[in-house]
Amino acid sequence: MTVALVVLAGGIGAVVRALVAGRLDAGLPVGTLAVNVVGSFGLARLVATGSELATVVGTGGFGALTTWSGVAVAAVVAPLPPGRRLAVLVVAVALPITAAWIGLALG
Image (cartoon, rainbow, N blue to C red; front, side, top):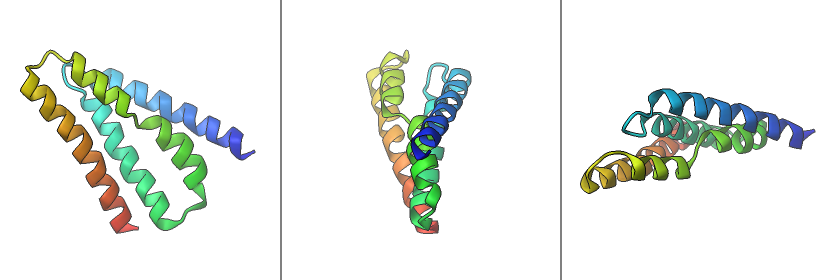
């Protein structure tokens, strides 16, 4: 039963990511960054609280919602000068890590 719930949560997370990124990623990966920040925070909160939902919602939902590959590709194909592209990647790593730290701290 747990596997089926992880698959269901993963499907929901992937669809949400596609919808948000599809609407907000225009030139910059803003939508992909947003879901990565929200997903990192949410997963950290689940882990910090020891919630039994961590396996289903954390692995399935937040795992499918967040994606490093999406940020990497969006930053590489964005019509930006190399310096701005690097800045996008730095922010794309720093913000989700910060969100996870805050989520754990609020535990």
